[in-house]
Length: 207
Image (cartoon, helix red, strand yellow):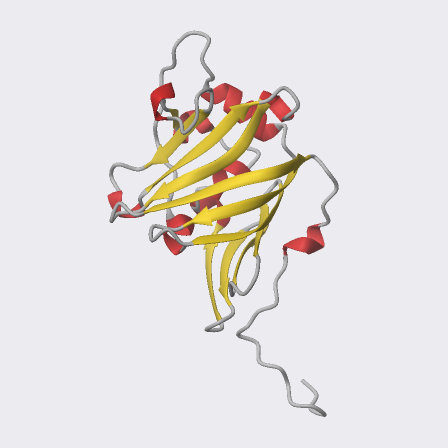
């Protein structure tokens, strides 16, 4: 989980065959998506699957609510991405622009500087588009691949279907999205969290 949050997208410019989906196409699709909600399934390197719901609002906001007894929350308030572990009352934070999610959440992101489209053979399903972001000078940060599917009903004609992260030890974490809805009303207030580090005050005591 934390490897996924720390992975940083970097400097690549790809050439693509004539008629193929380009980074400009992907950039337009991201730019046309103001908000998104979806169900997600996250598969860890050990095969363990966690599920939940995702909400996204550009610029800068995203939230992953894990279902069941999973004690985690991942949320960005527009500038800071937080990984909250309620089981151990810890919060880890990073500037959202320093994470791979910055590619999705920053309306000014220039994909031509930070990513490249992979050959069709490296896409998970026929017809899907795979976009790789990695920094060969910093292999400890791992790499991330976003997957998109052509869809005329989606903003910009492409639907984000998920992503895959590979850490420095070659462990894979995959996120798959389903039940996607785009450009619907989402309140900014939905991107906060209860900080587990703040202990409740004893009754009768003023702060």
